[in-house]
Image (cartoon, rainbow, N blue to C red; front, side, top):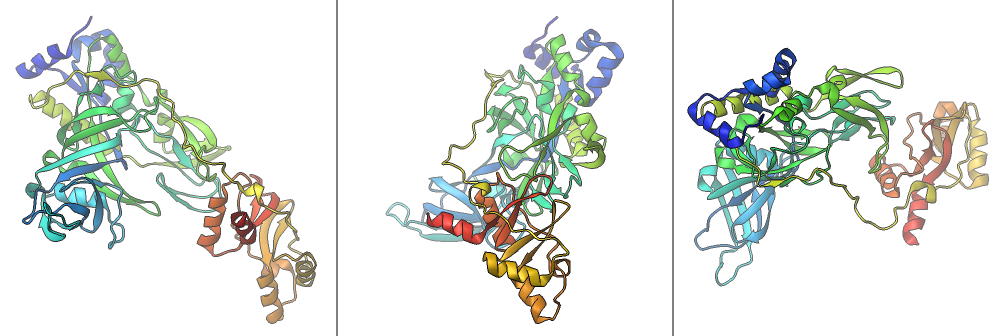
Length: 491
């Protein structure tokens, strides 16, 4: 049993096509089976709505009088890339404003789609054919010749979930991660997301017509970092046809600006295999929880997990129940599916056959770079003391060993750090007592395989000059100081 996309389009034109959402399809297959579902359903609509940082738009502003060749251009003080042509530019969603906090390219795009004007400011070279050297004006979407959303990486098939084993709060692109495995965050809409309903890319490929923020858009290739089952799409659409309800500029605290987008893809039910694909459940979609507490490209895997577990709101890590929160909007993804279903049923959206298939296997390569220097290559032996060591004894150690930082250890675990400054302050205040009375208890640490750049950033961020180097059990392995890093740079 087979049908073609042409057959389905004819049914759309006649008004007798059967369209269901991905959510509805799961129930139909459970109720009547795969073969009967095939006889009944022509199209399954899918949807996702979440942060898609790798997004932006090309603009052609039209020529001013006298004309200008834009060397640099800003839209509401957010700089766009101008290395294309005289009055063309690409505005990235994550580009930040030069004058406004928590504002970026995503906000400019959302405001334009919402019908608002933005300030356009540009400076030029000044040539015979483009004599003008600067311009400041106000523009709206109607004033612009072309406004094309072109997104290098959207609609991730699935994401790796995130947690944090470190002892401090982390602000990441996966949201705020609490210390000591305090929470888990995840993205993606699981069983209703487009690429999960066509995992072999039989109907999704170059030329596939999609729903992009309320407009008709197209898949133009694999997205960057496409690596099934973590597939991605490169997509385009006309910004002038989009609706602001299906896009939202968002600020992720401590990370930056991103753009939430609504993408829906119709899956034609060509045969029973496509029924099987579109009946996938969250229980069958697996990913991994990775540890952002380790600041390396390859982050440790904490455990494997299904989307059903993630959506339950709780997962187990090391025998403890941990709260889970989504970064994508299931509510808005449902809205995308339903709106795409309505457009197809009303004859306003026809399906297209891919002109080229997406790659089903692709291996991601890391950046080629020079040897990475890690903390263990520069750390020195640490002189440790206990909480009950006297301040007087610490003072003698500082003088005898010529050190400024002594990690404080109890039961073989790091519990604090005492410095020459702490000792001097204790003496000046007449507090010649125990280390536990003067030590710093909240210690910023480093791991032995951590790049030295990360260690240097920690010192700068917290205005400190040394980091105890510890293992996963907080046992002290050594000490890295600003002097160690300076000597390395000098070499």
